[in-house]
Length: 192
Image: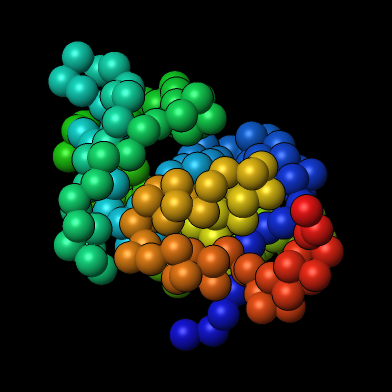
């Protein structure tokens, strides 16, 4: 597996969201927004169904509950206002209310099959190119972007670790791009 980078520039994140809001398929806006806000691996994100985010009354839930495919850990994840807004746009524009339906299906398929990870990779790369991202990006970029942006906002590494479901802070540090050079530079420049 090739290493991919997070989206570091907040302006580019906003430009991608703006571009996706103007496009006809609200699935893409939801995929990007959920991807950078929920911190799920693409395999877990693509398996989400309408019933995971909506209750039987048709209201958007406050939380989703998943069992991670990779780790088998059960997780409770809050749906923040950004994700809730993208979900509302999605439901308003698609009229999809079948609780068993996948959220992210192929545009060309009338069947209830999840979007595959190759197509998700193609879409993410297309969105990145449209806003001038030249770094290597892919499906994991969405998850890494959340961790990176939280770190830039000063969120404690232990909190980011818990949100991403990592086993240690060391894994999280490496994952979000804290390098040995950066640690050395901070250690040398921080004087009490």
